[in-house]
Amino acid sequence: MRILALDIGDVRIGVAISDPLGISTNGIETHLSQGKEKDVAYFAEMARSRSCEKILLGLPLNMDGSEGDRAEKVRDFGTALAEKSGLEVVYEDERLTTVEAEEMLIEAGLSRQERKKVIDKVAAEIILRCYLNK
Image (cartoon, rainbow, N blue to C red; front, side, top):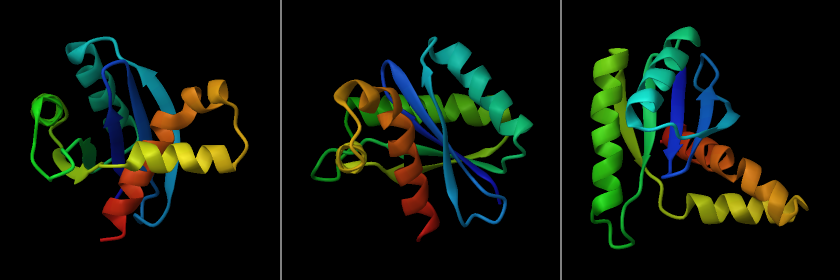
């Protein structure tokens, strides 16, 4: 089952996809947000064109596990995306994934400027990997 994963931020959205067997993950892009309506249409079409059966959204929980304003925005986006795509939308705790992505990129020797370009898609890949490993 191919899954499209999104790490949704206010400015950028990291995108990753699984292989058809749900074994490996691949970061696709860092999408610059064009607003909710356009982003929902963009990702619904991406999911269709790549034969995805499910869409996974990183859910930004507070450190105590509660949901705040950002989680509410992601759930709102997920509802719109499910309606537009006709696909199941599921959520995965994304706490500390950006920190993990940052550490990986620093270890890889990327400069701050280079990290900024790819960190969101690496975070999406980490979210997807966590989901698949359950």
